[in-house]
Image (cartoon, rainbow, N blue to C red):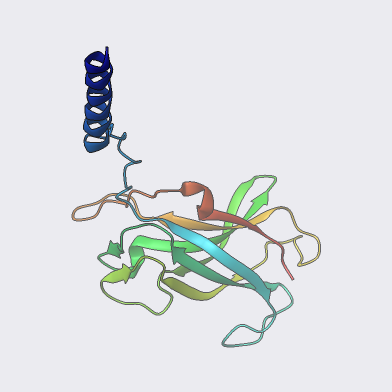
Length: 168
């Protein structure tokens, strides 16, 4: 009986050691997205943008666009991406202000992960719209359509490409 008990103990110890040496493989983690994510990270109405003073029918919106994605954003020039100020009028959306990104750029464009562009969009308000009485207004990121040598980037999160704003 002692031999049977000793053999059982030896088998249990061997089984325990074998399972400790070969753990159960874990499933792979989520895939890493290979994309950029230009996002409107912040905005603020401004009464004193750089340059000339605002006229009564003008607005200026300070913006910050950040690359939240894991890859560096690149484009051949500043005309491939821009930010616009859009007013939702009864007749449809009306783009009233535009700024290329980066605001002071020329030539090839690059925005590293976590880096930002900052600037102002200055716009003239449509007739009947004032800073205090206006329909919905938003900032919006835009990409140029595909052309020879250019394809718009894969954007990880397009929900952060628009932000509602309040005019001041």
